[in-house]
Image 1 (cartoon, rainbow, N blue to C red):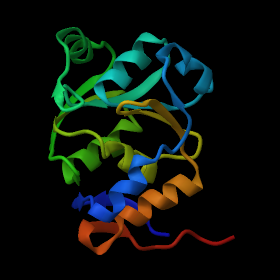
Image 2 (image 1 turned 180 degrees about the vertical axis):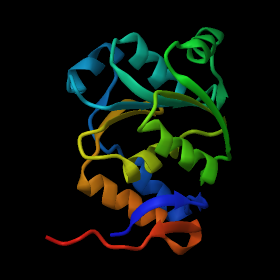
Image 3 (image 1 turned 90 degrees about the vertical axis):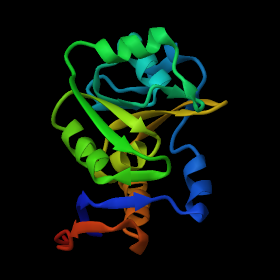
Image 4 (image 1 turned 180 degrees about the horizontal axis):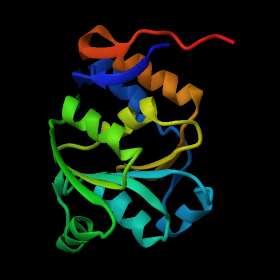
Length: 186
């Protein structure tokens, strides 16, 4: 499969929504359990306001996090919003990303987040940052993301998850620009 280095624009198709509603790993209800699911040396990413807040407060070493100042489509509480805006040690990024999409700017921030400690504020919606992270991160990276009304999903990137994400991102509707050189077999 081609390695995705760039993405011009991706819009989630209705028929793909159900696939992404299923968790890609265990779902926990108690944020205090998070450290039990994150290997000590794992590269860890958090997607979502509550997820990032809980991960940072649980003492997990966070590489980068993505948030939109919304929880369940409502404005995030002041305590969480102020905390996320002021976490030290993270370079601030702000990108526009409408609901149900991955814009070029969000995709670039995802790529950069693997190399630098970023806090990425999304003007719009951050949910599909998870899909972009799945498509681009190395095996063993851990991504925590919110599952509304269920808890927090803890997904460990592997070839299976990456393949699902890359297939979704490479549909003709996505406007993908990718490196078409196939990985060397063998």
